[in-house]
Amino acid sequence: MYLTQNKEMKADRVWNFTLPAWVIELPDGSHFNVCRNAGVCAKFCYARNGTYLFPKVKGKHLSNLTLVRDDPNWVDEIAAELEHKRFKPSGEPRVVPGLAVTSHLSQSVRGWLQVGGQAVRIHDSGDFFSEEYLGGWITLADRFPQILFYAYTKEVELFESSVLPDNFLYVYSLGGRQDNLVDKETMRHADVFPEIEDIVEAGYDSQHESDLLCVLLPSLKIGVPQNNIKHFKKRLAGRTFSQAESESKRH
Image (cartoon, rainbow, N blue to C red; front, side, top):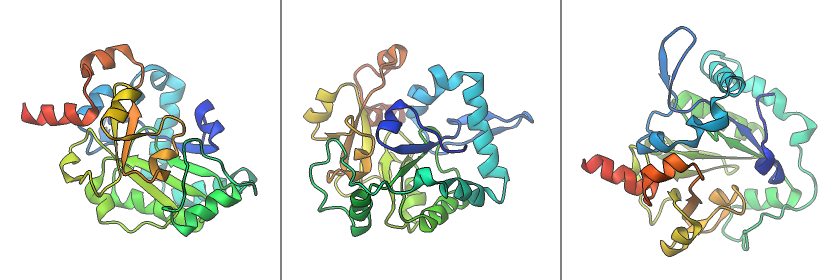
């Protein structure tokens, strides 16, 4: 299986496709940057910590990267998995915790909610490392209109120059090299905050009740509570990812 679920994602009926995070060493000794526009976020990345470092987990992520980087038929291989009955709509309307209104959503996404469609998060680690790779996921979204595909990404230039189907939603994840290209008043973006209270104080809306909220909330300003990883929290020292990125550029 290429698409997996952890406990939290299973509760939301979200499937995940994962790549390694940031710069990795390949089996031949060469290096590859999976997150081309990662900035200060690379220093605080949860996907470079804990269970993500277990050999079996790292091997799975590397296998996924090898698939999408080197196999010209990778789209067809993932499509074959998406044909399975577990990715079919349940037929019962979805209730997304924290989503009070849906009138701002496209007709396609409202229909997806109504029929209880499945969701695929593209990457809880890694990013869209090329235009061709993003194009593969666009093809999959076109092929499976009954599934909602969504992603956090730091590839602002790439996404701003791409045309996506209605069932492929995204949010710009701050803390990267292209933060300056994100208009915070007109572009959906997510920042990582120390605590939920800090999210509210900054005028952002939290996605803590369901990860799907990052792309479904009417707000363009999404707050993500910081992972409880002590050494990362100590180094961030109460800053958001965007603040840490801004400071790193000034220095």
